Length: 145
Image (cartoon, rainbow, N blue to C red; front, top):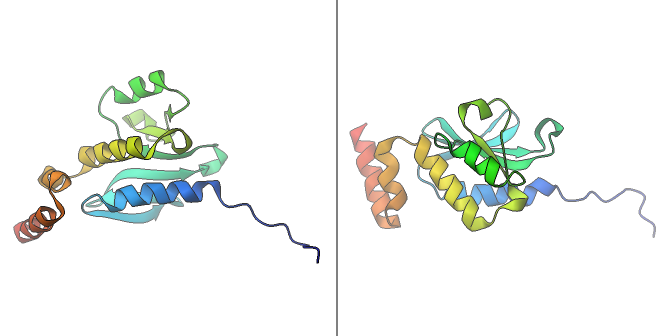
């Protein structure tokens, strides 16, 4: 029997958002919400990563993250196929990372550093702690509130 409807191709961004979600979900105190129509990751109500799935038809399937002073320009200069200056937040030093051009290991490094730049300092110990230590630190931080 002949099919009359075209089969839809899987969304190119679907596998990449899952990569980003997997890493971000492992970072302490992370929540995910839709912001501007895209999955966005927060630590204590502060954004540290935004997924971009061809947002406004810009051609990027990427994650946008904050970078330390001077890092954005260095990354883009070193590898303009992998890194770009995103609209709106690029003027504040954020950098876009093309997900097709980055390994899982490198993605983890960038997202951990973005989290560290944005997370309150009292949570930084959670990133290095073992799972058991992380739970103890979370309980301590909840008591301090």
